[in-house]
Length: 210
Figure 1 (cartoon, rainbow, N blue to C red):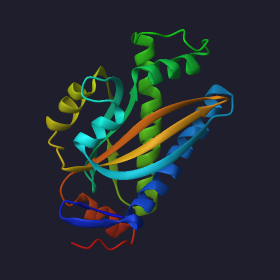
Figure 2: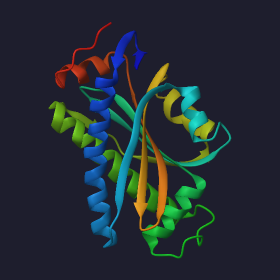
Figure 3: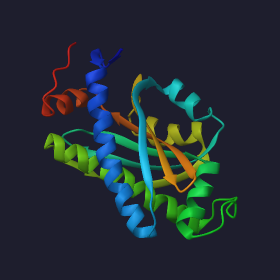
Figure 4: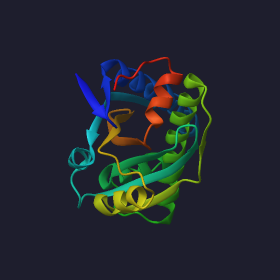
């Protein structure tokens, strides 16, 4: 399997490396989350794939799907936009889990819920970027994370288009967070500016063919 992004041919090798980075980064975040909650928490990365923006929206539920999203802009040697997206039901359950509430207690996103989701999203995205920086020895400086709770179409338009990060294909890393018998699915977006992938893969020692 291969994909073409910014006229570059990316193979399973590239995706496997990015998935491994996701596993390492999100694994570190999961350890921190488990310590914070004082309970066992696991996270898996089922897949990493380059897809179009339209396909990404379909995977999450469509333009009108209500989501909770933590987004931050990354500056440095690999300029990018990073988003962590949960649908409303997953976000509510995550709030219950982190606040020690019975599952099903939260059914709307209040100020406390926003704070909780933003903290977790910041932890997850920060760990992912730290893993890239360590493995590739690249300088990546994240800005202050922003939180949005709105329809997916509105969230993506605000965080990506206005920031100049419109790409034909984006990296989508699917994540599943496990806590006892429950699991929460999230979607992690890593969207780079033109030629940033060249810099990243070169630093990782992987040749990208045009």
